[in-house]
Length: 149
Image (tube, rainbow, N blue to C red; front, side, top):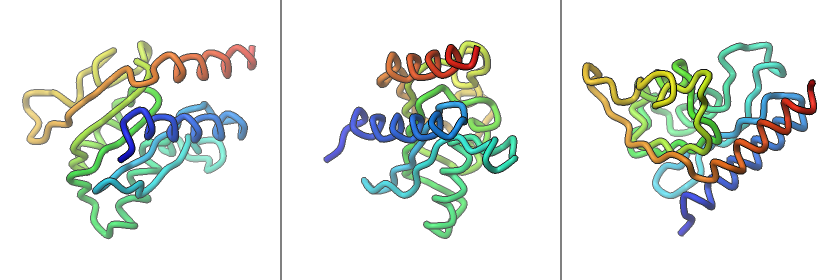
C-alpha cells in the first residue's frame, strides 16, 4: 500500500516535468479508493489559462473520470500549499484530505496567508497534512526561479 511519501514523490515527478516544460514546478495527484485517478503539473503557460494550476487540472480530470463533480473520499497531493482558488475548488469538490509539501508564504491559502479550508462558516472541512517532502518541494521551486534570474 503506497504511503503519503510515495504519492508525494509522484507529485514531485509531475512538478519536475512542469519545470522541464517551462512551467512553475508544482505537481499534484488525486487518489481515490487507493488508486491514482489523475496527475498533472502546472499548465498555465501551455494552456494559456490562469486557472490551470496543477490542483485544478487534477480536480477537473478526476471529476470527468469518476463522472462526479463531488470527489468525496479523495485525497489530493500537491507539492506546494494551494492558493485560494485551488483551496476553494477543493471545498466545492468535497475533497476529503489534502497532503502538501512546502508552505507558500506569498499566497498559501491553507495556513500561510489564509485559512480557507478551515473557515468556520464553511459546510465542508478538508483534513490537512502539511510538510510532506517539504524540503524537496521548496528546493525544486527555488532552483527553478534561481535559474530564471
